[in-house]
Image (cartoon, rainbow, N blue to C red; front, side, top):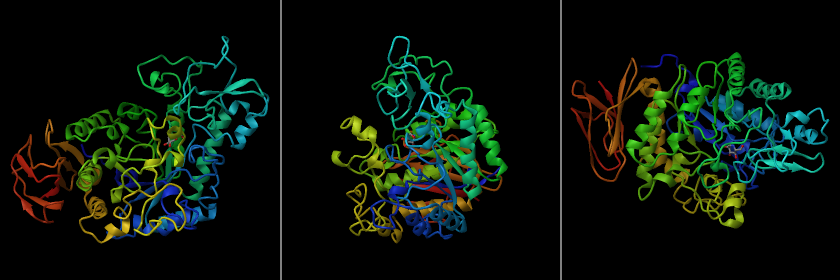
Length: 540
Ligand code: NOJ
């Protein structure tokens, strides 16, 4: 069924900026707000020369000791001097809005930095007025930590505080104590933070680990399950996904709606479509990332299953939200590119940008970036340091974007905080801008095509193959338009056999890697595709 309530956040293309690695304006090797401002034309200058994205999400830019690279916030209402100032932020927001680009802030409300004044006050004494803003517990009667909860980043989730002889809870690093959402003052303070940014004009929020805000009121032990590391060896029944969340989401949505046209997208810890369905929809979160989609192998059947699972689980008012890469997971070209990075980049982009749902791009994917190689001595990410060489952490997916082939890649005139990728002299924006066959050119064409196609923005999704083997074929159908998408996932020619006969209509190519625009193609129940071909056609 076609979705009739069209909103900007359903139809637009979002783009995640990892600010430290986007563009450095002052030569200190770290990306900053003025750097972003200077590159807004790359994102959207109102013409198909630019990528054409409708909104950006900025990973955290707040004051922070950077133990978790900014996801440890020391002040929710200011900007880290490394990134600039509130005045720089206002200038960026204004310039973005002038170009029709909306902006989401990243709100990390599950925890703060241990340097946040709230925690500093909380830890002063058992009688501090802010004691109950965090989760403090006595040792268990048997001695030791209050229960068996583990930190996502490794080790137990309880840190002993010598001064007051109590433990505090941290789902991530010990430097990231969890807030106590059961305390109404905490809620009030966090809603005030939302108001602060809404008043400044931001268009919404990405909410970090939004399903972890509440923990079990009785602090029961999590039951065991098979897994490799401590955190994975438990069923997380009691340290996240508590029923109290829904009331908070309803309040958040009400606040957002009271500002008109604002939205939020949730990051779910260990998320899946059914969980998203519980938390998104009317009077709940607007969107949540479907991480199940990112976990699929490079096979059309796997993706189709993931898409159908997502579609099937959507609640009333729910809307899919797809992404292939972000700052926490290996870039999708490193996962899928193999010997055909450029070809697969295009197939993956065509899928992401023609599905029913809101697509989120991660900076650098539009030029086909892959994970960088970071020597041990340069690792910044705490889990990377802890688990090296078994897990190299998230630095490889956070390396700077290269804007050109110059020594600092056009990213910086100084020494970049993380090294540029080894292939940056080929994989950079300047090298691809004027090449009509580049990955960047293909992303631009797809995004600008999407703007022109109501069926791609809001039409229903109808798969045309029951058990895809070589590629995907689906229709996107709105009241005004029907669009056909056919994708060959592999390096051999493919014959896609369809469930339905498409001969009643004429199909006109609107974008293709192998067919010219406007080329008419007569179809019956078969589509022939060249290796890694993307073909998008409109029914006339
Ligand atoms: C999820 C964020 O995406 C990740 O980067 C961060 O380390 C954790 N939440 C903790 O805030």
